[in-house]
Length: 314
Image (cartoon, rainbow, N blue to C red; front, side):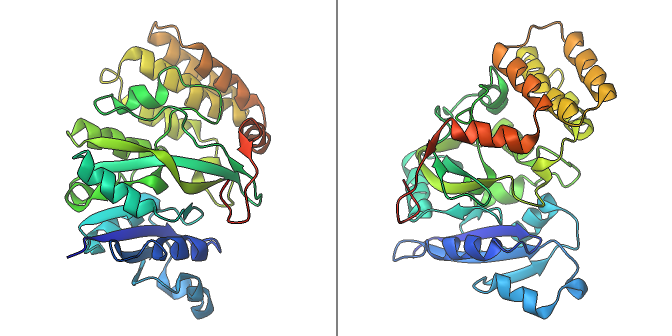
């Protein structure tokens, strides 16, 4: 029998969720069977019946009661009946053949988790970036070293995106998303999964269109406190060179973006206490925090934009 892939889409009913569902449903063919599970992270009683039209096409619609995206993903995984689970954010879309390519990689490389490259698009724009990341994850690497060590100040930096993940259903149930985290939930999940011994492969092909700067995205908030709290959990576990690069590229950038002098001093003290010189790339990324986020995203995307053709793919 054809293995089924359960697609878990958490949403607050942003209008783009309709496109996300359609792109997941379009993956089905004679070799790919799809189950689409949408988890609406709101109370059922507060949703107008007409708004539920946005999730037409889903096989199952659940309600997350405002517990956040991580909790919604866990809820979707528990309801999934597929042999594999794939995650898709409600403002992203999958390109044709995404699941077929990843299911083939899952079997060929004997791994547990398959990611892919993406093309990025500024919300509301039509142009797509070049395929990113430029360098894919190599099996056996520490995920945190791949993501954060010597991080490049460009759009093609090392990345593993949630909307690209295809996961063996056993792994999806064994490794919960940490609903207590306000930031870095995707990185946290991947790092814990890899440290538990589950193997990751990244397909060197763009299979997802990732929207940046979408309204309502938690990743748009410069929450340096949640970021430093998460980072310090890994002190003594990660290599100090990786941790100091993370603190500069992520947490210091958030503090500067928030115009928080207290945050800047707090992050600087934590980084200095490691007695490790950060790499140049993370320092430059930190300094970019002085730029408004929207301007920064436009500059980075412009550095690697390709104009899309009539099918929406360059």
